[in-house]
Length: 267
Ligand SMILES: Nc1ncnc2c1ncn2[C@@H]1O[C@H](COP(=O)(O)OP(=O)(O)O)[C@@H](O)[C@H]1O
Ligand SMILES: [Mg+2]
Image 1 (cartoon, rainbow, N blue to C red):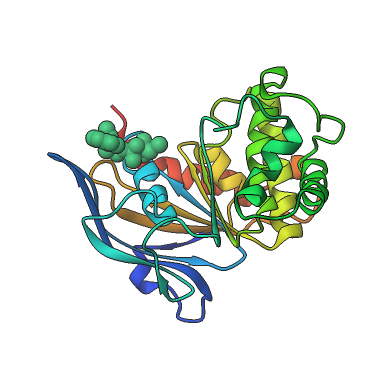
Image 2: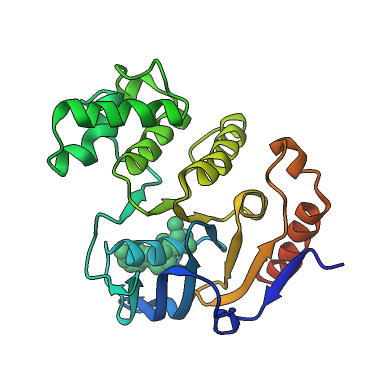
């Protein structure tokens, strides 16, 4: 039995998918460097989709284009049918390097997005406290970023994105600066958050295991110029013990299947 439904490209995606973010014909070059070539993708609402591919294949570029932080040379992005012309409140970006305010406490950092939106202090602190707890940082509200581990700082970044109540969360390799134990814990939390929060997650990673572990859908990008090479939907039941997932036959088969496809690009 096959571990996953494999499709050659997104054009063959079933029409029944309720997609919140659509990418059509997006290309991007930096000077002479062709980073992305005609990307067509749909991101299903309320699901976690990973962009998986080797370093330099344009994952960050695509995520930043979706975020409205950089412009594509060609093509369009729409969110709920509306074209993306820049950053917007329905999308929140969680940076690889945390991007926390070093002079502000955890609570203030988490509340910062709400502060920018003009929410009253009492309201934004109440909301921030809830999300600090939600990402497992209860008790650390008054600490400063330099007092936290890399994993904890990344949780602050995630809490900040959740606090502004964006529908789409864009995460760029959020676990790359986090040690192995914290990464496992954080991945488990993300699975739980995705279920509780009903947000749409677009998650960049270069780790096959990570992608298969946490994703509803994996978009495999080819090496530069980045193109959609495959879409994989791991048929993994995540409702039980998270540790069990790593032993799930579908998990193991899907990891192997993706590796077989990617192997050709590794020298
Ligand atoms: N600001 C930039 N100027 C020039 N080249 C860039 C810039 N940003 C990214 N690139 C190049 O574009 C390609 C894709 O980069 P990136 O999107 O960061 O890939 P990934 O996140 O998959 O590692 C790489 O070759 C990278 O060197
Ligand atoms: Mg990157």
